[in-house]
Image (cartoon, rainbow, N blue to C red; front, side, top):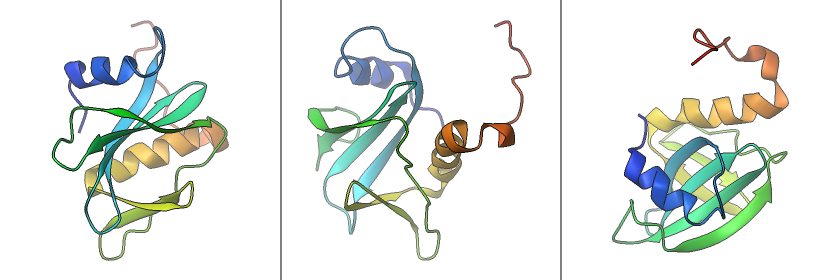
Length: 120
């Protein structure tokens, strides 16, 4: 499910300048608790914290990592989860393809479908 434009604009404020956001998805720290937004650009993976009560208002940068870092793999047993930067995060199942696509873009670009409308 795509995240709304206003949320993307709020995320962009923490990225410093006009950067193209390739992927963005929400996550929770393991067993509930704090909320995060993973924002993937062509250069970086920036993890923004949103706190416990808001999932749509980033409040700060939790960490920033080179784009060459893998986000997944995502375990889908009893709920979707993945480990990133030494922390386990949980995501809704609908965001698993987003994580897989973000990783494939860097590590297996041949597996991505071609853009049906490349001129837009």
